[in-house]
Image 1 (tube, helix red, strand yellow):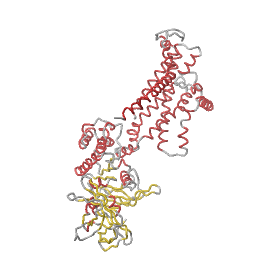
Image 2 (cartoon, chains in turn brown, purple):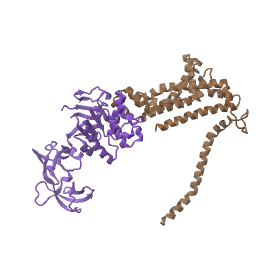
Image 3 (tube, rainbow over the protein chains, first blue to last red):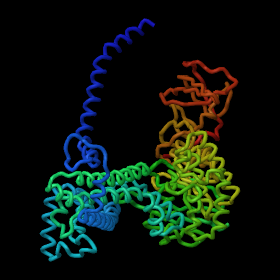
Image 4 (spheres, rainbow over the protein chains, first blue to last red):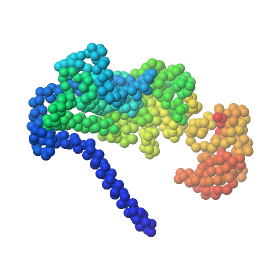
Length: 281
Length: 354
């Protein structure tokens, strides 16, 4: 019993600095979050700004800028192009990336270690370099930037997004395959399934969250990609480029409305992605 | 009866390592046979070759007299219960159990009926809609068992299926497996490193060592008549004394233990001039009376340990080697330092070679 007060006094002596620290930490944390998210909040807030110029004080609230957006032909066309581009790029990245991940996981080949490290390069490289490289390539093979328009926003930009984002699919699916317990495939073979049935009924369903997750990631990345797009785009702008174009005429609430829509779409996709990841645990 | 499964001189190498070395084994229909061995003894590799996941470098595996060589796992009429169960995580209990029947295009009514029966057999009737991760380890184990049994394979392969369960559950499942083997008349080939498990369940045990079968016999014979030092050591608790060269005279052998010459029953592994050991189980060692015939060793008690079922008395021989005995429950336990003359029935002392 005599030891008890001693312990308490020790605890009390330590209490003050601990409180100070926790306050400091809390403040720092809040500061960081504010730094990251406050600009976003301002953008979203001013999408509902009931005045023609983005300026203080804020005039609440109107939806008319979203109306302007819907009636802006250039913006609507750009949105269509962006969606098509993102869907095609996702399809392309999956078609190349999923088999690529399987090859990495299942086969030994010379240069595999180097390939494993280089596969992320298109993502790490500055978009400018990827853009210039792809532009040079397409002009070398003589593929016009507007080819395929209006069916697609232009084959070069589709191929460019696909090429740059395939690595996302490869790395995500490869990481999942490495965690995949191959004994499940043996169990399936043991239960009379062929190799193809085993892939279809066991392997693919088990890695499905990773495949879908990487697809969603590629979709959002493609949706707001600027650098590569800037080099490869033909006569049809994508949403980010259209916004960029509008900005040169000054920041209007319409730009904020467009940004808000893009933000909302991204958030929805990311939430689905996070749920898939959790389901995979 | 014609054997259901036959391994003929099967050898499997991984690089320089010989995992299975010229192994032959014949399994009768309905038999419960266990491959017992330490890790790396080749037991799992043997099972994987029978299942079709590995291919022998030489030798032949026959099922019902027909060679299995070249048949992929999905065309072999046997099923495996895997070590970590290997349940399909995205399928429900019912879908897991029905997987094999579905792959064989079984009509839906028959599939439903057989899956239901299999789940009842392992007492999981109420959990059909659950996913594997919503089940306990013991329940997952039962699903894995049902998933294999539902296909009515000719041979059921079990690769340490109880390893992940706690002791109590493991003992329950051991008996349950044995009953299933009897009830269904199915051939079980069981792989384990747990000698007690092997003794409990098996009709015959193949004790493996470095890719070969060291001894193939029933559990009782393996316990009472181990063919070598390795087997005696691996199965149960035993005293291993000596290590000096033995001289063999027909069925008996003489060797020096604790400075004394002892006569013991010779086993096949004893060769003149090679080191040999005297092995005697602790439950057969007793205190010698003044005129007891037979082997006799003087020892000093060093420690006594009460374990509930038995009291173990540890003693030291004159040459320093240790000996353990089970003390009779009715007698008062000797104090450390007590000098005892110990003996055992002559036929229980075995002379074994390495």
